[in-house]
Length: 132
Length: 291
Image 1 (cartoon, helix red, strand yellow):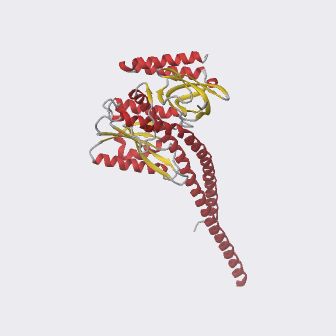
Image 2: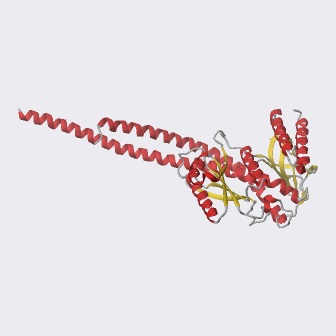
């Protein structure tokens, strides 16, 4: 069994990471999951959270929001609408995101209210997880 | 026959025009490289997105539970044309080629008895379409303050479009932009945005059986708005690169024209100076002979 897999993290504007990873911890919409080589094929959407990549060069953390992850036996790729290395996220960035999400939650129609409120809560959790 | 002084002034003014066009050409070349890089680095995301979405769309598309963004409203009465042009001119046929395509489409739709609504992105397209289609305008996106087009801009446009779709303002949305091929070739392109369409000719994504978490429908519903934003973002970037490419070649032509004009004027200037000298000499000599 191969002990590494190809991992790509791309945002619309750039490719943030493309490494041989041993494991990737992904904040999936239905709960966190860890992808390792030879994982069964899976597509899941993301919730705002921290994505951790363990590779030969060490462990890297990224803050990601929105998008999805595509996992196959030979690799994993994460397409995140916003992704930043953990150290580069500022409190102002997070506040802007939370403000946006809160405004949207207020406008959301009744059936989408729960999802919008969850997004705000996830963002707030991400902010505190980042220690901001 | 213009006087010597006039000619001299004329030459000076063409020379300074040439300086300006030359500078604009070089600025466009530098910007083009940046725009191309931006388009390049956005490509992996757009390609992956498209592959996954077309796989999903193929498996969910037929069912009744398909999201409206994919299935459409079931009618195609009202069309929204999103015309993306530049904020600035002096870039050859860049703006007018997009406008021409959009105009042809609008005329065709109107003739078929459909309702046409137009949303413009970029000032130039709005100006050119105003004369014929002003009453069809529904919105305008101003990007003149934006130095560097980001995903946020695209997302803003997509959100607005989807909001309008949910309100039932239109049935079909099509975007118009220039696809960048090379510095001298930009291809005006129309692309249907809503309901979403995928070129699933290859169907690579469908070959592996994926587990979906949450369900396929939910993922698709989540991804479709993002897919629209991605398509708009790609279009904006392609447009940006095309604009700079078109401006670069237009300014290159202008510089060359100015050079030719200077040569022509200089010859004319020298000839008339020579003629004036000869005339003076003749006058002096014939004066001396008369004595």
